[in-house]
Length: 463
Picture (cartoon, rainbow, N blue to C red):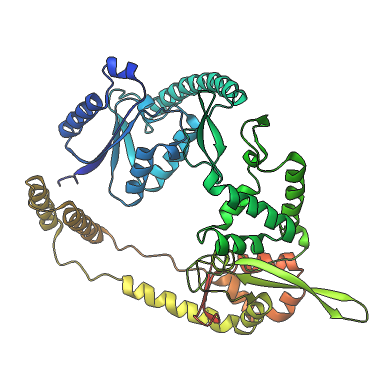
C-alpha cells in the first residue's frame, strides 16, 4: 500500500546579524529544509519565518509560531521541520506548551540537523531535555542582563517597549534627546474627564457609558480596567518615576479604593448553580452569574439573595442584543419538574445521531482500495488534483479499508446514574442538599443548557 504523502511546515528563525555571518540566514535555512523535505518525500505546505526574533520570547509574541499553530489546528500540517532545536525553542516552559498543542492534533516535528533529538525514543528525549536545559540557562542569563539594562533605562525615563500600544493619553516624545512617554494633547482631556467622572459617580458602568457617549463609542470595559489599574497614570513604572502623571499618588489610592468597591466578590455568599452551563442565545457567550439582595419581610428586615445569569457582552460592552437576565430559580424549577422528560428527549437525540453515523457496507475489496490509493498519490504528485481533494479522498479510502477489517462498535452511553436517580424520590433528595452540593449535582449531571430566542429552555444535554 502507498503511504499518504506528508505535508510539512518549514519553520525558520534568525535573531542577529551574527547568525547571518555564520550561515544561519533565513534563506540558508529555507534551502536546507526544502531539500530535506524533497529527499524524504514530503510536500511543503508552508514556510513560517521569524526574522529578528529570539527564541526566548514567549511563543505568542512570535508571529510565525502563532500562524503555524493556527494552521496546525486547522489540520493543514502533518510534520514541522526546523534546522536545529534552538531555532524552535530555547525555553522549556514554552516548548512544552506548544508540544501539548502538537500532541493534541497529532503533529510531530523533526530537527533536520539533529537526528538524535526526538520525542519518540528514550535517548532522544534525554538529549532534548539536556539541550533545552542549556538553552534555558542561556535565556535566564540573558534575561538578567536585559533586566539590569532596562531598569537603568527606566530610571532615566527612556521608553523600553517600542512605543506601540501605549496606554490611552500617552505618546512617544523626545525629552532631552531621549525617547520618552509624554502626555498626548489630543487625549489629555479624555483621560482627565474619565478620572473626574469615575471619582464623582463611583460607578464603572456609568463611567463606561459616559466615555462611550461623549468621547469614544468604542471605549470598552477592558480599556476602563486598564486605566484603573495601570501605574503609568500615576507617573511610575515598576514603582520608579517614569512619565508625566495624570493623577497624584493620593488620588490614585482613592481611585483604587473606589474601584475595589465596584468588584462583586464570591464572598457575597451567593451560590450560582449553573455557571458555565448556559450560553447566550444571541451571541453564544457563556452567561455569567449576577445577583442582588432584597428585603422580603419589612417587619423583621429579613433579606434574600436572588441569582441571575446575564450576557456580559451585552451588559458591559454593549455588543450583544441580549440584555435579558435569566433567573436561577426559574431554571432550577424547570429542571426539577422536567428532568425526566428532558432526559428521555436527550436519549432519543443521541440515538438519532448514532443511526446517522452508520456507514453503508463497503463494496470494494482491500486490493482494489490499495490500487485506488496508488492512483491517487500519482495524480497528486503530477499536480492534477489539489491538496484538499487528495486529502479528503485518501482519508475516505483509508476509512473504507479499515471498515473491511473490523466493525467498530461504539460503547453504549452509561445512563445508570441518572436513571437510578429518577427512580427514587428525586425532589426530596435534592431538597435536602445544601447549596454547594446542589451546584455540584448540576455540574456533574448537565453538560449544557440551550435557550430559545425568548430565553426559555429549549433542550438540555446530559453528561
